[in-house]
Length: 581
Image (cartoon, rainbow, N blue to C red):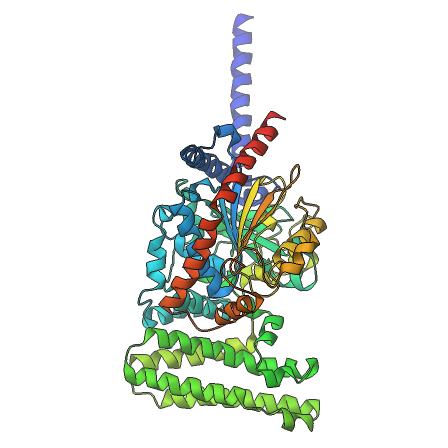
């Protein structure tokens, strides 16, 4: 009996080992082939990587509060986000002034998150190229004021992108912003920051998806990027940042593709010119008088001019040879003369078909001016680079495709995925400032549970528009947002330098700080003049202009330090109340 029982025990143990082995093999197989959760995370909570970073960052924040004399414990460290608006190079430069002054006032280390859209993301990308940037913000400033990137490096980067499957105008815009404005070709990838320590605030970049945006689908529009994950904010569907751009189907990774670098990312995040409405605003006065039907024809013409003009400016900033500089000046003059030549009287007598043909001919003439100019250049590397650009860029302008990225939600089984995302193998990401020109959406609600938002405002146009648009967005997605008294809209032409919108219960408090205001402009006319002087779409600022913007933004921070400290103390109390409840 004893022997039989021992034999039964041995057989039972053997069977268990076999079953466990088969089970582990099946689990391993499922993890490597079929389980969509391995690649796509569905949740409105933080991923584990961001949770860990934030927890580590709180120790840095706690030390900063102690240095400022604000009583706080680790459990009561408030969630503070610095959200910079868009605004082209004006925003990129002004953000550097804001963070530099915050560092000087010992306020920067109180910030848990740094979020940006459009132009502010350009300087964010440059800042984070240095793992210790919050300890020396002026290194990025020095880079923007330096000699910049050689044209050979620009063309070399573009040549590599041109060999990829989806080479688009985003790649061209990327080098215009990275090399032309930030003067840095940062070829690292965002996911590389996932392993960093918590010296700096956690970065959150924002974009929007073109087709969901055009169809008014709020849930599928806003797209956020962090070092750990990227995905649609309101859908709560995220993929590891290193996997974004790879080929997916029904939640499965079909083909791994290289992650885009920071140059390409900057091109996507600041691509407002990709939108037809923005392009319309760049038309010369005589074209804007044509009417909606006719100026749509003119926009095709202006597409070519605007991109070529930016590329000429980029080349000019890279050159020192006086002969080449003269050649570039001649080209710009020829292009501007062609576009600014008023043909409105001629167009009045034309049919729609004749107008269309006229502008098609004018587009061909613009391209021909460029080709003839290139042929007249002396043989050498510069002519070779220009020839390559003409050959590859002009077809992209005609196609007018931007921000094409592999769609990780292609045929994803979740019914909440909009059809325009579910049915397309590629998505088109572009400038989030076209929807809301401050990156509020990722910071609303329970996910990041923000107590205080510091919002330096660098936008053009209606100065309070970002607030009202964010309020309306929050209402649509049922997220908390503080009350905005419409009476302040009367101050939009000549705003104060600081407003505080107190959050109640789970609403964040917002400290809102317009760049040009009553403290630095004597009246509304001066505010308007400053915005025109530092307009969003213009050639690069010189050193004096950059220093003026950084000083203006920095002074705003300095003047309102007491307000910020007051709201930081309140944020600690709010966090303590949340913890106790």
